[in-house]
Image 1 (cartoon, rainbow, N blue to C red):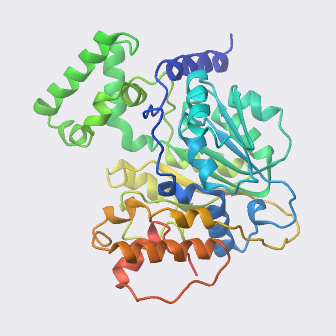
Image 2: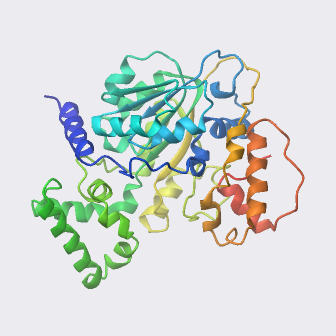
Image 3: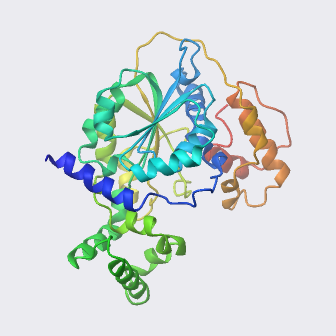
Length: 383
C-alpha cells in the first residue's frame, strides 16, 4: 500500500466515523451566508478586477459544470442553492457517511448532481477539461500529495476557470499542532470515547493553568468541544499537512493558478487595501501569521491562467436569491452592527443586481467606514 493510499484510508475512516461538520440531518444551512463562494460571485469579481471572462459567465459554453472537491455533508446543499439550476455539480468525497448525509440533505434538490465516493486524485485523473469552477474548501491540507492533486484539478479546469480554496494557516496553528502532538504522545485515540473525554478534561485544565494556551483555548466555542466531529477534526485529524503560506502560494503558481483575492474573515488586514480587491503578498501574510497578527485560514479565490479568445459575458438570473434575507454575518462587524434590516435588504438586492449585470441602484449613501467594511466582505462590488 502506498503512502497516498494509506493516508486516504485513514482520512476516510475518520470522516466515516465523524462526518464533518455533522449538523442535524434535517437542518438547512443558511446558504446565502456563503454567497461569496458561488462561481457567479467569484466570476463577477474576476471580471471586474482583471477583465477576464470566466467560463461560468461565458456565453461560449453550452454546458456548465462545478466540482465540489471533498464536499462533506453540507456543502452540496449550499452549492446547489447558490448555483443556477442548469449547472451540473459533481460532489466527491472519501466518506460514504458524508455522501449519504449529503444526498439526504439535498433531497429533493438533486437535479444535475452526481455523488462520487472516491479519492480526489484518482477522480480528477479521469476527467477531461470540463469544469467551470472548483470548490476545494478545507481539503488540500488533508492530502498526502496535494501538489499532484492540485495539478490534476487544474488540468480538468477550463481556461480562465475559477477555484475557491481554503487551506490551513499553519503558522497560526502552532498551538493546535502542539496539542495534537501532546495527545498523540499520550496515545489517545479519537475512536475511544474515554480518550476523547480525557482530552477534553486536559484542555479544560490547560485553560485555567497554562498561560501560553489560555488565550487560544478561550477562543474555542463550547460547540467545538461538545461536537465530536469538530473536536476530532481539530485535535485528532488523521492527516494534516503543515505548510507555510509562502509554500502554498508557490504551489499555486507552479500549477498555473493565479490567486487574485483573499477573504479576510476576522478583519485582521484592515491596515492594508481591501484584500478582496488587492491581494496581499504571501510573505506579508506569512510574517503576520508568525507574529500572531493573522490567524484566519487562507480563504483564496484563484483562476487558471488561459489564453482563450475573449468571450461575450452572460449574466445569470438569480431571482431565488431575492427571496432570502441578507446574510447574518454582515452585522458581526463593528461598522455594520447597526445597519437596519431595510438597509441590509437594499444592499443585498443591489449585490444580486450587480451579479445579474445591472448597473446598481441609487440609494441612501452610507458612511464611508460602513461601505469600506461591506466592500471587504464582498457585499459591494468593485464598481
